[in-house]
Length: 101
Length: 194
Image (cartoon, rainbow over the protein chains, first blue to last red):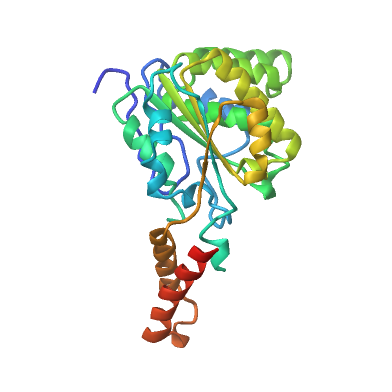
């Protein structure tokens, strides 16, 4: 592991962020009382804690096949500037779920 | 299946070992009030900062706000600027926004407009949106070339969903092998006819 590098944080049960980059200086939490305040100042939302019982798990209903499409791979892998940056998956809410209720 | 997002997990797997950030936002009808555009963009920063440390320019902006504006959260244009500056220091960022149609309509447009502004100046951003088909027009208005992919469940998706539901059946006494087999056969058939 390179010095100063953040490791990807595993992310199985939460819809969320994992980051891994060098450029932002990390200051250890113990010395940084301001840290918590700043995070709250940035946003009161807690996207890290995706609450349970959310009904329309749209991204969850995206099946494996979508990830194998050329469109997705290109979006993910192409060099910057060589690809349209916006991908839109559309479908009815919880397709495969609400239909079945 | 219910608690993890395949796309994000997959992107994170790919990002491992590279200077790539993956962030996710989830829109919810029930949270429309607090899901303002500023709060949503701030939540992207919050995810970046909580994993990677607080960038110095954010710390400075916070201190300035404390001193001069009573700690007020940045207004939308400032939030966009802070976000641009933060993203510029990354190699690449994937922003996944789920159920965009669940945001209040005015905020859908605001968020798209802010993202448009960010994408315009930063080529290292990839955005994945999900939502109902009807917001397509809005997305195209801001991102004319957006790649659109329709999502519908495959037979396997439906079967694994049914298995999950049967496993958590709240009235297992009413279930027997024959009924179970019928469910597993008939429902996928009916759906594929839809």
